[in-house]
Length: 256
Image 1 (cartoon, helix red, strand yellow):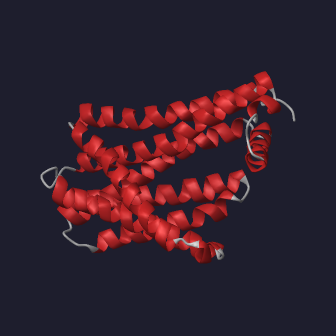
Image 2 (cartoon, rainbow, N blue to C red):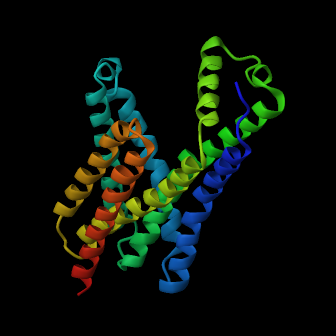
C-alpha cells in the first residue's frame, strides 16, 4: 500500500482543528455582538452529553439484531431517535432550564454549544485519531501500525488507510464544510424550537423540528454512499440552506 499523501494528513488535522475552533468562534462573536450567554453555550454542550447518554440506552434496546437486518428500518429508527431526543431535549432546556433566556441570540449559543460538542467528539477527535494513524503508517509501515491487532481489526485498519490513500484536497474541503453545515443545521433547529417556546407558543414547531431532524439523519447514509459531489451539494448544501432560511424566516416573523 502506498504512503498517505502529506496533504491528506494535514487536511485531517485541519478538520480536527476546525471542529473545535469554529463553534467557539461563533460563540465569541455572539457574545461580543449580541451579549449571548456563555453559560447557555456550555449548557448546550452538557445537554448534548445527557441526551446522547439517554438516547444510547434506547438505541441499545430498540435497534436490536432483528431491526439491523433491515437497513431502511434501522436507519429510520436511528434517525427518529436522534430527532426526538435532541429536539425534545432542546425544548425542555429552553422551557425549564433557561426559561428567562428569551433572546434569539441565546438560541444560537445553545445550538453552537450543542453542535460544537457533538462535532468536536464525532468529527474532531476522529480526525485527529485518523491523522495520527496515517502519520504512523507513513513512518513505520502497516506491520507496526497493526501490531497486536486481531485479524478483523487489521482488515478494518487496512480499509481505513486505503480510503485515505485515495483521498484528495476535495475531501478535506468537504470535511471542513461539513463542520460548518453541521453547526448551521443545529443552530437552525435551536431557533425553530426556541420559537415554539418563547414566541409562537406552539408545539407544532417542535414537531416540525423533529420531522426535519429525522429526515436529515435518515437520508445521510444513502447520500454518504453517493459520489462526493452529490453528497456535498444535495445533502450538505441545499437542505441546510433551506433549513437555515426557514429558521431565519421564523425569527423575522417572531420579532417583527
